[in-house]
Image (cartoon, rainbow, N blue to C red; front, side, top):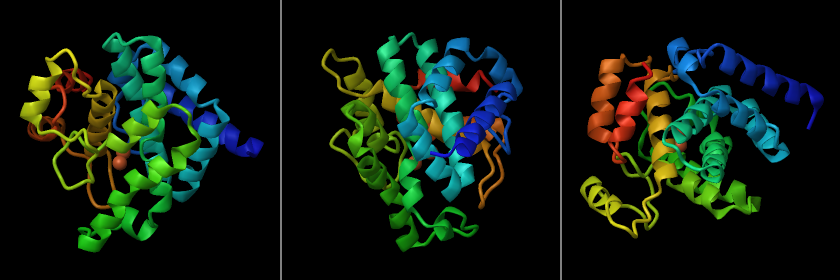
Length: 238
Ligand SMILES: [Fe+2]
Ligand SMILES: [Fe+2]
């Protein structure tokens, strides 16, 4: 990995941290930056020093810069929600890795689809869904199974026809099950899913402008299938 890229990556991270993620249509505003836990920034810095992460994000950056910036923002917000939720350090570490790499499969999706301004057709929609499976394959060498599983699940907490793992459940079932002792609903997956949704909704994409926060709230309240207290925690940042 060239020194230039490492320098660029750290410059971007620095900007994300300093400017409160308000980086090229970034979604997290300055007020949020202020309430971000200093530990979140520290952990992001540590994760982004891992050569495997550097190489993967470098590839993502050269392929699709917007997805790379989105990944940095989702990474930091997820870690922060983890600290706020008082998860233990090892869980937050897994969360941080998975959040930064959640869309790594998009390095294998064509720009004609990622940057398409018009609505995707059926074939294109099924192609973009493959970023889940491809991300899982790219992360084969990561020995931590939890990281791979969370990456594989990151679209399960929203409606739609994304491929499901066997952890797929409707919202009502999740709420009941979350209360049971042996629930295996992955709270880390829920955190990444809401960070991903809120960043996608509040950022510009080739096909849309950022949505106002009232609109974002409406969508999250109807479409986010995870723990609803996460919605309140995310919204209070705006
Ligand atoms: Fe995704
Ligand atoms: Fe994403």
